[in-house]
Image: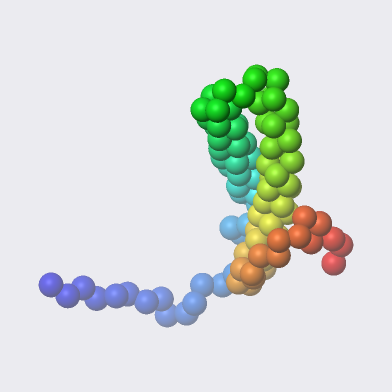
Length: 110
């Protein structure tokens, strides 16, 4: 059975009605919180599993977990900047660009 695809007469106009600063902040904060939780829990689970598998003392496990916070914090900060950058691009009607994996790239004044 064939169905007809209905297309609008004119493309929808881009405007600020769908992108408020609060909505953009909430979307960027949600993505940042998601990455912090996922990478943090993955790091803790991995370190804990290896420590229990190889019989590493708890003190060593806690030190490795503390060191594992460095990449988790890096990913969280980078995701916050990238998410805010993407929200600003979408609010102006532009397409998403390729990510730049530099921690300070999205926090520079332009």
